[in-house]
Length: 179
Image 1 (tube, rainbow, N blue to C red):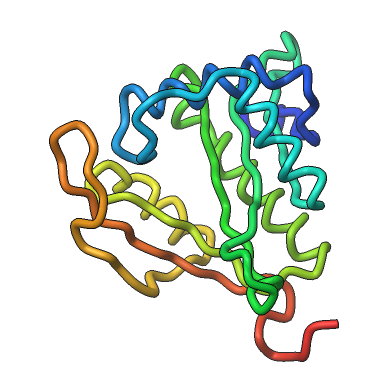
Image 2 (image 1 turned 180 degrees about the vertical axis):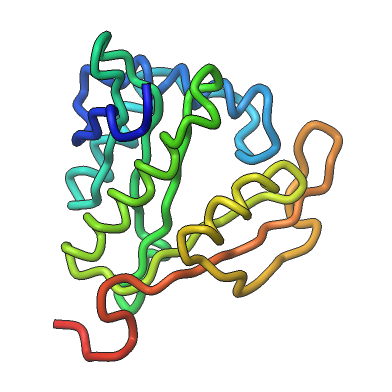
């Protein structure tokens, strides 16, 4: 299967068990996510509802043959204050068994398109170091640039973690006044 064979669609409540399992792997085995305990399905469903009710895109990548969820991506508010309303933060998670198959790229590309169509002007990616080295190259390949770092601000699994922020313009970016 190639990334062009994927079915990328809006996530649905029925996808929550698969989304929960994918996310749990990152919480338990990676430094890329700073949560210490994997949220249960009820919490993941509540997060999904908050984001989709607020109008943010939430996508899944499904295997076209089996329908299995191979990854998901969503946009969320970068900050709650109204002045940030044209800026979103992306989150992308691919099942551990599905890495290096173009799924993340397909999801983020579609998420970028959705966010631009919704009128958002900037997208932020928060990437953990160590642990996010692959995510850095991945985001840079899709037009993100490093805009800031916060050294040693997180602690997980015996490691100090640095938060690196990457940014890319969406649509007209800052070239015109938003409507």
